[in-house]
Image (cartoon, rainbow, N blue to C red):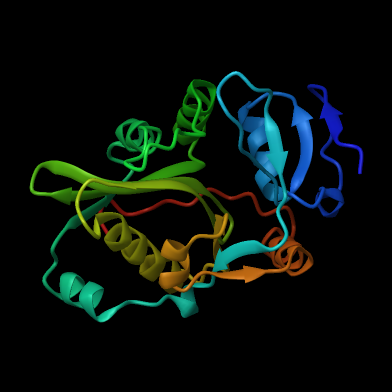
Length: 228
């Protein structure tokens, strides 16, 4: 297919028209309005510093349905011992900064300076949220994502201590299950996410579930508790 180049007010093309890699469109900006429009259509930005904004709609999509959450024996033990404290929206900027740091394996980051600034603005507007994992007074793990309606769109996580990000992800998933959320969108496949119960879902099915979650244009903000 021919990749569509977006101007500021150009609507997104049909997400099902993405190419085999999942690339849907190029260009445009990361305003709050554009980002909410993107996620509400099953599209997300992912690109490197210095490149134009690339918009993606992969097939399949990796989702975690809260009822399918898998908790290993080891993680059950850590949860029972309350090995970490988990908060929400206490240190959004610190979480995204840690998520954007170079990985231990030497790989770079896709969280550009523009993306950090854009998601911080989205956080201040009430649509982007962070989960912080603490060991005493030290921030040792966390994750952030976009949330509206009954859907959470995960963006990235980090861990400075073994199992800390898993701990935070599990606590978030358990809370979202209580709130009858439809899914956590994990976007891209990984063994780490599969170990927690995430699984591939064909794009057409994902878009149907997304439309169900957006019935009557339900772009409502989620109010989280201080602690999980």
